[in-house]
Structures are given as C-alpha cells and as structure tokens.
Length: 415
Ligand SMILES: Cc1ncc(COP(=O)(O)O)c(C=O)c1O
Image (cartoon, rainbow, N blue to C red; front, side, top):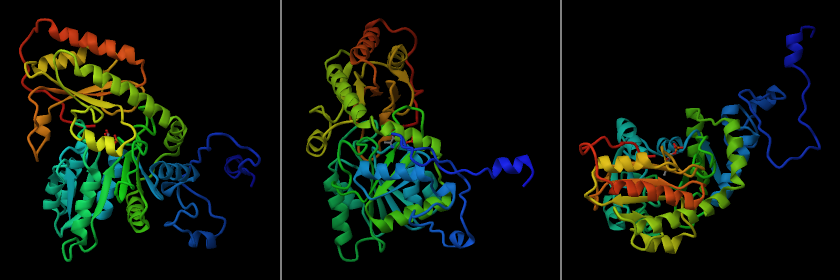
C-alpha cells in the first residue's frame, strides 16, 4: 500500500489495553468489521452475542440497554430513537390486521394518535378505556384484544390507576376459556413517570415497560430516546426483530449522554419530587386555584393507589383555575412566568408549563372541572425562586383584565 489515503484508512488500530475510566467509551459504527467470511456468515442478529452492523448495536448502546434493563428490574431492553418511537414499536411488533389495542383515556396523547391514525390504517382497531374503572376495561376486552396499554399516572391530569386491578382484569379475561386473542393479551406500561424509581412495573404485573429516556434518564432536555423492557424472552424477540426491520437505531453519542446522566438520576428524581410536592401543596391554598392535581395530594384521584404502590413521584403537577378566569387570563398568567418557561416535555433542569384544553381530550368520562388547566414540570431551580415566580404571576391575575376573552387557541399537543 503506497497511497497515503489508503494508509490513513488502514492504519493499525487497537483499542487501548490497561485503560479504565468511569464512563464507558463511545463506540460509533455503521460498518462493523468481521475477521473472516466464516464469522460474517455465522453472525447472530438475534441474541446480541456479537456485533453485526451499527444500526443493530455497538458496545455503547448494548451497555445502555443493560443499564436500563437493570433500572426497570427487567431482563431485556431495546432502545428506540424517542419515547414515542418506543410506544409505536410495541404496537408495530405485536399488532396485526384484525387485532385491537386498548388505551387509557388519559394516556400520553400521541400514543392515542398513533393508534387512531396509523394503526387504524393497517386494520388495527383501538378503544379508549377509563383507567380509573377496571370494570370498564374488563367490559371492553374481546377475542381481538392483543395489546392493553397502561399508564400511571395519566398524562397531564395525573390520576393514579389501580395497576394490579387493571392487570387482573386482563389476566382473568386471558384465563377464560375461548375468551382471549389466540396469541394472548400483552400489557404494556408507559413507565416514563415512574422511571423505574417510583415503582417496579413488573412487580405490578406489566409484561412490557416503556420509557421515554428523553425525560429522567437523559435529564438534560437535549436528547430524545426511548426504551422497551420486558422479562419475557419471546416478547423481546418480537420487539427486537421489528426494531431491526424498521431500522430504529440510536446514535452512540446520544446513548453516551444518557449513560452519563443515569448516575445522577435517582438524586434528581428525589430532589424534583420534593420541590414538586412543596409547590403543589402551596399552590392548593392560593387564590384563583380551584384544584391541584398531584397523586401525593390526598384529594387527587388515585391518591390511595399511589400511596400503596409508589415510593416517590415525578416532577409534574397540574393546576385547575377558578372557572371565572378566561382562557386569555390563564394564557397571560403563563406568559408572565419568568422561571417556568413555555415548552413541552419534562424532567429536565428547567421548569416548564403548558396550558391544556382537557374537555376536548377526554372521551370515556366527562372532564369534571370547568376552569382552565396548566401543567407544570418542576426543574432543578431553587424551590423558593419557583414559588416566588408562581406568586408574582398569580398576583397579576388579580389585576383588572384588559382585552377580550379568548375563546380558544389552546395547544392541541400533549407531551
Ligand atoms: C408519558 C410520556 N410517554 C412518552 C413520551 C414520548 O417521549 P418522546 O418525547 O421521547 O417521544 C412522553 C413525552 O412527553 C411522555 O410524557
């Protein structure tokens, strides 16, 4: 080889021996080199016993998968490019034309949108069920039900369901002779809120636990990633095979960012939990506020289930305003916050808020409140500063309102 470009590419490279660091290295690859044709021919795509192509994993992504499985108390993990991609992956891996998926009415909105728009186009039907009523779920199960989504607590409104009772309804249906789908019914939990820290998804009966690693495991508000974890090997292989066919790889650099943040995750979860509970309890007593929704508050729906099943809570609470306040006033309240910024997502360092139109987002039971709702995500700022920010924005609501009442203009996304 005489040409410099060839030398630069075929330069001998050996990973350093005798070097150890706290963080695992970032291994990046599309191409993975095989030592021989025999090795290439005998490659194992299925069991992660070796490396085949960057899309299907590198030492960095395999390390993250192993750590997320540990976090969840599960055996097998598959990474996806976002939390929503992980939700969609479960549906695409398991559902076929003629099947039905059941989703809680208060689930993360894009999970419902994926089923109602994409899965419906592929011949898969979807029903929403009332997550606070296991009998409602039981009544909707049929021989076509293949997948039942669970979420705890509900996205935005934070009702904490009786997960073991919902799982028991599915198991009773599966055990009834001739009653269940021939391939069985899978329960999949969106465990982004619990994050593997507030409770163990598998102890409460879920077959599959999905997380948006975008939230706590990343913690930086700068990475998108998702995970699908299970203890059931056959289920894992279905998810993994679908993942390979879809080309759902994640970047090693992003995986490294999540690996870097995992070490501080439990501390961040606990600190944000403490600050959130403080602010939620304080806000309850403030003028203009009709209700505060947070599962640790005794009046919040599902508080007893949360107390029974959880050791902590995530950084979200929602405030329902007094019905006399117009949407324009609530929007101005949000605009006047200085530290809570307007933006989707949660569990990052910066506190966030988003107003929602709940009446338009509920199907199985009417939304019980008349006033507008704002969801808050509490970051890592000093809690006294966050409280002062809420107080100054609330005091602005007492000032005489200017302008006309706004009829609509609410965000339609959920995140
Ligand atoms: C409960 C829940 N699940 C899933 C997701 C999707 O995560 P991602 O934003 O990574 O797609 C989100 C995002 O907000 C979420 O709140």
